[in-house]
Length: 461
Image (cartoon, rainbow, N blue to C red; front, side, top):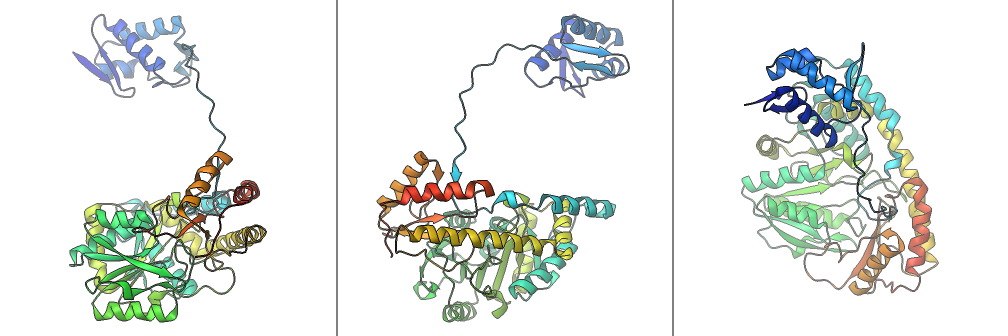
């Protein structure tokens, strides 16, 4: 028969019982499950958990103290000693961390730790018990109001709190939308080409097909879509990865198409706060809130690890999205929602974005200046966002640079090597995430990139 030591998850079986307890504790210490300094339960508590006499536990503890496995101090109880374990196998040296120029993340060293910590502390201190209960699946009312105010003011979105659903980021929001659209009878979503392969896979995982939307110098073109495609996913303010802006004519064309086919546009405003040469272009959603879903997050402005995003939904999609949310069971933790609402309402979020914008604007200018010493081919797209596309002559040259970059100590990402194209396309390029390196690594990363690109086959499309 075996009993369980509740506090230690300790199996003690066999006879004599004291020896069995000794063996179980030795195993827990040598395996690392009970690290040095761990305080053990009192002899009476452990005896009660195991259903044995206290004297048996006292005997086991005394033996392990004598052997040096445990230490016992009057007034401090019994703890695991600093035991000498068998020498571990030699661990090979870890390679120095590579410089990272892949897109998709902000400079995490800019994260406002002090402001975030203060908001968490302030909001939890003021929060009532109900704030930490199972909340509204759509998200905290405080955050939804703060988000509606923020996106209306900074992106021109026509939003109210009732239209906002809080998500764990854009991928979560897209998963909910894909499920909701499928339940509404749609079968295909048009996605930009080139575009993120992860988004296509997510849509496929929800049971929908994708159709390519070719992206030119003025953005994606709806003329390439079949008539049965009733929904599209766009990055109109700063196309990823090309960096172009959707022109007014094409914006109108997408909205006219959605109205004619009773469809929808999903607007991924992933880095809309970061435009460097002029005022950011306003949200597409403002032109027709009944047909456009506006999606944003803090992944580029603060940090992806916060898992905080939002959808501003047309009335017809609110119930289907909430149904999808209920089925998946995914929701955002209350402390993060309360803290973000506090940052937004106090203006701290705006101040952080302005500081980050100045940093990224300077980096993109430095990148363009350095590349101008190597080639006459400009970066594709407008000065905005956290990445830029450098066109290359061929996919073979792209692969060579990505592979050579690893040996040179820098991680790079290419259109072909990372699956941006829906099908085959001869155009190649490096998607350079100039915002990714921490402050101290930016200039070393830029220097390494410049050396790597000397003599490279760079060619405009």
